[in-house]
Image 1 (cartoon, rainbow, N blue to C red):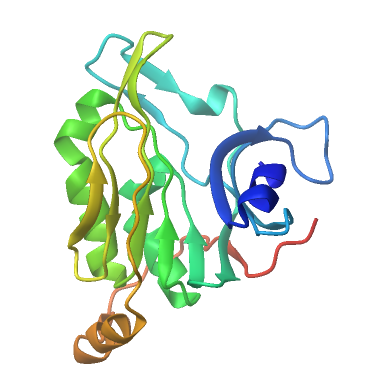
Image 2: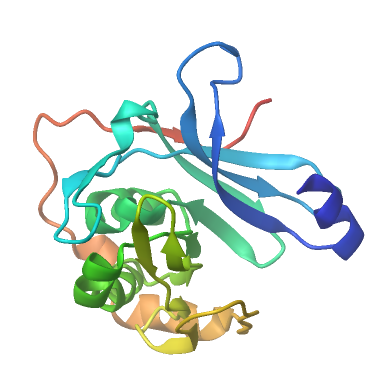
Length: 219
């Protein structure tokens, strides 16, 4: 992945990768999303906070991600050439408080590499990615696996880029594709100024432990 970033002169967000904690190589792995810059350097690492322990009415039926992965503990944002990026993964989309924390930490774009099941994706994927964009007034970059896989498992696909007004700028239902969109920072600033939802929040979690903010990645 690092070599690819250097070869293509691109920043890459990739996830998830099963990696142990940096300082505990023999510990239980995390489901990680990594941000790699165009020099092939790891700029940020996000360990997935919400693990997919659910029952789904599909061929597989039961998913227990926590059997194989440890829970993450921090909110991660990082500066990039296109803006300040917050990192999330898949099932995180169902927890708007995480996205509010990313917005509070200065996120302007939020990534959500995902593998929603065909059942949950058909019901909720489009609603969730658009809602997270609207409520945070961020661009949401939602790469999505689609197709059939061992397990048996079927994923929904429908990768998309959503703008801060909730508009779908690009989408691919199935199959490999490259989705491109331009970030209009002036329009994003205007949306936030005209509807300052971040300043209007009145309800906050009481007694809940807030995840740490990891504004800078340390290898």
